[in-house]
Length: 459
Image 1 (tube, rainbow, N blue to C red):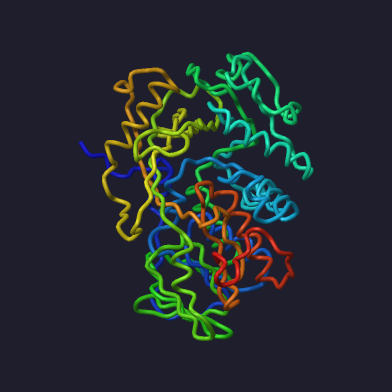
Image 2: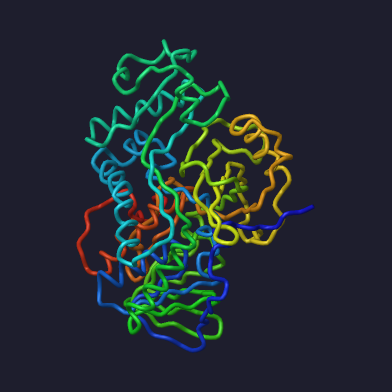
C-alpha cells in the first residue's frame, strides 16, 4: 500500500488557521518571497531592525515546503569540510562564516524569547559516527584548523581497536582521545561494531514549521501596520527596475523597493532585469534539487532528545553519504508525550525539479533503506514490528558550492537572496535573515563566504 507524504511537523500545525490570499495590487518597501524558515526569519529581523513595511508572500501554505519536511535537526556545520571551505575562501572568511552559523543558536533563542514561544526547543550534544580512515582524518584536519582559527575544537573519540588507529598522522594526536569501542557505540546508541569514531558537537531539535507558525502570529500581532502576509499567492515573474521591482502575482501586481528571494531557488519563477544583464538563466543554474526521504515512529517518552548522524555510504541509488536520526518529545494524541524517532538518509537528485510533487507516493526503495538502517544499526529489531506514523519527503535546494547564498544580487541591488538549505538549513536560514535585515537597514557589511558572486563566478 502506498504511503503519501505525511510530515510530523505539518501534523502539529494549527489546521484551522485561516490563510489570507492577495486580492488586489499592493505596495510595500520589502517583498519577501517564500514563507519557510528563511522567509519568516528575514521578516522577523527586518521588522525589528528597520522601520520598513514588509510583505511576506507564499505560493502555497506557510512552512509547507522544505521547512515542513525536514529532519528537525538544528546543527551548525556545513556539508563541506572546514578545511575545504578555507581553501576556497581563505582562513579569515572561513572563521567568520563558521562563527556566524554557530552564533545562530543564539539568534534562534532570541526569536524564541522575543516572541514568548512555549513550543519545544531542545539543545544538547549530538554525535556523528564514522567507520573509515579517510573520513576520520578529514574531521581531524578540521579540528586542527579550528585550533588555528581559535574556534572551539570538537570532541573526537576513536576506538582503541580501530584498524586505522596506527595510521593516523602524529600531528593530529592532540585532537582526539582513544577509548574502548563500547564508549563510542553507547554514544551512537548502536551495537553496530563497524563504527570506530565519534565526533560530538552542539545540536538541537525543533519543529521548524510550528516555529514559523508561531513567529508569524507574533509578527501579525506586534506589527499590524507594517507587516502583511499572503498565502496561496504564487509569484510568476520578478521584473527588476533600477530602483524598484514589480512582482507578477498572476492576477495582481506587487510594487516593492526591494525583493528578497527566500525560496529553494528553482521554482517556476522568471527574473527579468530591465536595468542590466540577464539574471534569470544564471539564477536557475545556481541551485539544484535534492529530495530527501524520512520516516518516523513513536515510542513511550523514556529518553531525552538527541540527534545522531551515521556516516556510512549506502549502496542503492536512494542511499546518500549518511543516515541521520532525531529523537524528540512529541505530543501526538490526547496531549500524551511520546518519543518521535525520525530517520532519514535516502535521497535522489532531480534533473527536472518541476517534476517533483509534494503528494507523490513514498517510494518503497527509500523505506527499505531506512528499514535496513534501523534493523542493522539503530534498534536491531525486526522492522515489521514498527508502526510508522509518518513518512515524508522534502525538496531541498543545494547551491553549487554548498554554501548558503545570502546578500545582494551583484547585477541589481534591488534583488537580494537568502536561499540554499544545502541539507542543513535551519541555522543558516536564520543567520541569513539577520544579515539581510542589516543590509536593508543600510549597514555596511564586510565580505563573507555567503555573498552572491559576480557574474561568471558561480553566482
